[in-house]
Image (tube, rainbow, N blue to C red):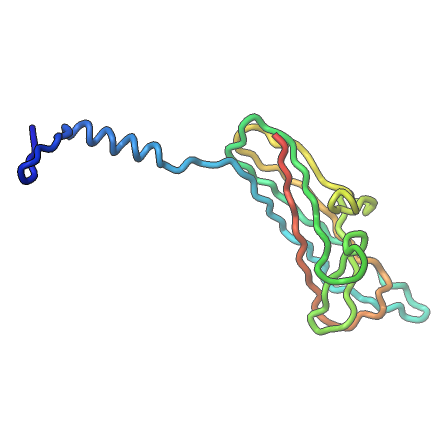
Length: 177
């Protein structure tokens, strides 16, 4: 079949070739599913903290809590290893990793706390320079790696004012194929 436009002949492309070009073009531009991982956490919930040391009474106890960390990966080819770094708190003095702080929403002193990789509170989870990294392996394909971290508010923070304390920390996942 030949199509004419005005007086110039044009080349006609049979329908099946047009369909083939459209399908091939669509396949070439179709999005591919990229491999990746997401980190999620339940967060640390310490509950109420009593900072007072009453005369003749017991000193205020430390408060502890644990959180679940989940690394969910999809489409990983060949597997590999990972490290998780935990950044500094957004408030407080010093490096804000060796001691992290929670901000008091009502003003006043910040509450010291920290996050540890062990239930004995001996290894601070940090950035690898200050504190240790967490790590493990990621198998090929889709997987979820569960981890547990441990939080602790030290006893005796008697300068704290009543309030609601909160903070957010950044977790950085590094994957090595």
